Structures are given as structure tokens and as C-alpha cells.
Amino acid sequence: MKILSSSDNDLRRAARAIAEGKLVALPTETVYGLAADAGNRRAVAAVFAAKERPSFDPLIVHVPSVEEARKVADFSVPYAEALARRFWPGPLTLVLPKQDWVPGLITSDLPSVAVRCPAHELTRRVIEYAGVPVAAPSANPFGRISPTTAEHVAAGLGERIDYILDGGECRLGVESTVLDLSGDDPMVLRPGGLSVESLQECIPDLQLFDRSTSSPKAPGQLPSHYAPRKDLYLYRQGGLPAAIRASAKQRAVSALCFGKEEASSLIDEGLCVEVLDLSPEQDPVQAAANLFAHLHRLEADSSRRILAARLPEQGLGRAVNDRLYKASVNKGEA
Ligand code: TXA
Ligand code: MG
Image 1: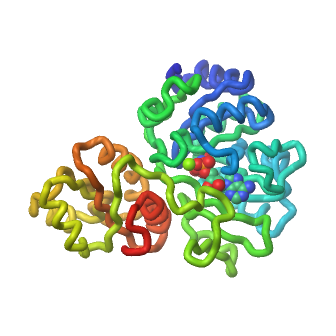
Image 2: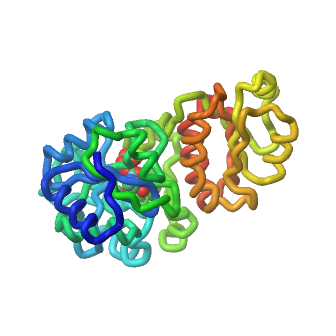
């Protein structure tokens, strides 16, 4: 694996590699993606293999513009055109009826395809230079913490891929919001970098996928995902359960909290190996940007478990809670 810089030369090299069927990790405004030519079945299969991702979990196709997106998906369904015009480039993925040529390997044989136009200058240029739409899941081994730096990608996938384009830290830090427009009612399948509230301004009857009443439509909605290699317990702010407090006494615990008051009281108690604060000012946007980097760090420290506070369920707080819930072992309790 080779690291590429943001020089025009390197961007062209990344584009050539993609056109030749190689695997290139690219930065986006959300997380790093592992890119392959969407029309090259062998390259797409190599993406699944590198991530050890099951073939029933479909990929997002990335395009540099709405015009290119039309070659991938059918934009005649309600809201598609208007939402793409309003929110692209940006952290919104639209699930739409697919065009015939899109390989079933990408869509897990669904009649729909997920498509998005990322708001990252370098990556849009690479996709433009490559001249093909690019299939790109997050650039992490399946089910593990998503990467927000080139170092995360190298640590997770390393020699299994050909190149990493180093674009620094991802600005938003959580994956895109996935909105399904292919069914009867528009439905958010995954909360993400674009707030549900912004979508509700455009779609009054917007449905939110509810994991307590519905079965998953796509594996990104499976309850376990994005998990660190140790147990993560979710708790309501200010309400650390007593049992967990007891295990904290053995100094086996690290904490991921939200707000400087909680952080300083945890630090004062001296119970934790490490206390990381998602956002001292309790800003959910900052919390999202810090989420995966903090989880990567807590995964590597000497604690045996992680305690993580839920955020208020609004704005990007929803996306952060979704990822923490999927990473947690005490689902339904917090
Ligand atoms: O921000 C992002 O979306 C990042 C960057 C790299 O663009 N990508 C990303 O990809 O998060 P991935 O593969 O980790 O997540 C894609 C999600 C999965 O939950 C998958 O199940 C869902 O999109 N998805 C893809 N195609 C779908 C389809 N046809 N119908 C329903 N869900 C779909
Ligand atoms: Mg992922």
C-alpha cells in the first residue's frame, strides 16, 4: 500500500489506479471510503474481500455531480431531484431505483442503488479524472470503527489495498444520512451527517426507520456494527449504573462523555483509565467529528470496557447515538 498526497499528480495517479481496477481509499467529508470502479465486477468483489464484508450488504456509488448520478439511478421518483439539488455535494445518500447496468454485486441484487455526491474537493476531482462512478463503503474492516484519518485506514486495511489518498481528518466524522426514496414513503434508513430536521423541512411525512418495530432493510441497520474490540456500555447522562461504577473502581474502565461538567466529575472521581470528552461545549456537530477518533483511541488503551454517554436525540446527536447504540452491549437499557 502506498500513501498519496493531495498534489494533482497524485490525484491523477489515484484516478488511474481506480480505472485500472485497483482499490484506493479516498477521504470524504464524512469518513474515508474504499473506492473501486463501480462497473468493474472484479474490483468491486475485491472491495468486499478486503473489508471481509458479507455480499448481502450493498455499497454506495459515489459520483461527482447530479448529472453523473442520473447514469446510476432513476431520479424521476418524488423528491429525488429536489433533494440532490439542495443537499449535494454533501452527506446525503439517496436510495433510488437503479439503472440496468449497475452490477447486482453492488446492490446485493436489490432493484435500488444508493448514490451520493461527496463534498470533498480532492475526492470529487479523483472521481472526475477516473471518469467512472465509484463504489465506496467506509474504509474499515466490516463491523469495526469507521476511519476518519488516513492512519485509521492504514491500521485497519493496510496491505489489503493499493493506495490511500491522505486528505487529513474528515470534517464531519460520521457517515452520510441514508434516505430511501425507492419505496412508498421516504424513509431515513441511517441517521448521519445531514440532520433529520433538515430533511423534514423538505419532506413533511418523512419516516424514520424504527429498529424496535421494523426488521432491517439493509445490513447497515443491523443492531451490531461500528464496534470497538471491547465492550461498550451506553448510559444516560448523569446516570452511570451502580454495577458499572463498581467495575470502574477496578480501574478497568474508560469513559466517553459529552460536556465538560461530566468529564471533570469523572476525572475527579479518578475511576477511569481515561476520560475523553466528545464535546466540552455539548455541541453535537463537534461530538460527531470526534466520535470515531475517540473510539479508536479508547479501543487501544488499557481499559477493559468503555462507558459512553447518549447525546440528546436531535441534530447530529441522532447519528452519534445510532453509532454508539450499534457499538453497545447493553442495548435497550440506556
Ligand atoms: O458517508 C458515507 O456514506 C461513507 C462514505 C465513504 O461515503 N460510506 C459508507 O458506506 O458509510 P457503508 O458501506 O459503510 O454504508 C452504506 C450503507 C449501508 O448501511 C448499506 O446497507 C446502505 O448504505 N445501502 C447501500 N445500498 C443500499 C440499498 N440499495 N438499499 C438500502 N440501503 C443501502
Ligand atoms: Mg461502514
